Amino acid sequence: MSTTASDHSVGHHGYHAEKEALVKRLHRIEGQVRGVEKMVAEDRYCIDILTQIGAISTALESLGFRILDDHVRHCVAGALASGDEAEAQAKAEELLHAVHRFAKVK
Image (cartoon, rainbow, N blue to C red; front, side, top):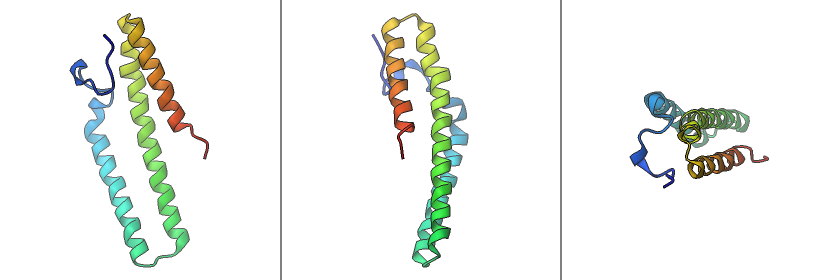
């Protein structure tokens, strides 16, 4: 039987070992967003706000790629090593969908 992304019975997800650092990074990004909100409320200069939004976008992309990397090294590699062809195929498809989401043309 193949597992899905929501099946927690298979153990920890790939990012589990870095979970605390990821949460801290998310809190810093959240602080950056609150800072932009304050800048808008204070009628700060447009370019300064756009610069901060760009930094937030970059931080989120970096975090996303870090989690994607952990997914490949843990979840996908585990499915390939399991010998379960259906599970390996499902994880490969899941990975391709994730890569397509990150590779959207802007």
